[in-house]
Image (cartoon, rainbow, N blue to C red; front, side, top):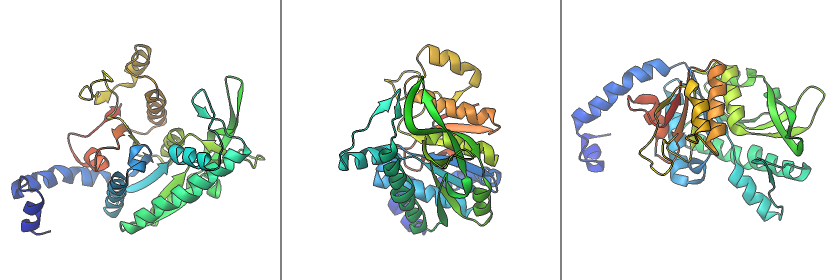
Length: 298
């Protein structure tokens, strides 16, 4: 890009500032090349077309410079929309979707068909090399049926085994694996199970020996005061988390996301983050700047 075009886009960013940005980013480029980063993709970043494009550009850039990115996606809102279209009411038990055989067919159709291939197509459009997978492919994810407090949830499962060979093979060939979280049952169980995408992403990160696990969410991160977006807690020690849950600082939908970060950390992933997917290029800001973004669990 010419200097004229740069200044036309943003006259405040002169050459010296551009050089500062690049110099700051260079050590991070060196650090991350060859490492594995698992990104759980969902929330508004998955619904807003502009944000979706930003995420795809970020991931293609990371892959292009030699960072091994694995993208794990959910799709709750899309599943809800499809259930509405077919006249099937969504039913939740303690926050988990009750998944009977009919709903499971729709979950598979939306996650492994529609959404997974849309994401792969967008990555290809941005110049990346991407391959879509589900947890069923090559036995990537195995799961056991969940009973929540004695209540039957249908075909909802918890990941019991990750067989990462297919992902490792694709990464070696320069592909970006895009994983939808439908799993096969354990040995002898050929049922398909609906899996929580956050938990699946954390367990995939552990199995791959990932250097970083990032969850893209609809909030800035963990807030000291939920009514004040400027009260972001940038770093939280794992030892602080039980007290923060007890006093309500971490509450509601943030609890399972924090628990997934803790799961990944205990499994050996050095860096875990919850970042705001509504911020354009939030993934690049987190990866390549001193300031970072969101909340890191350490």
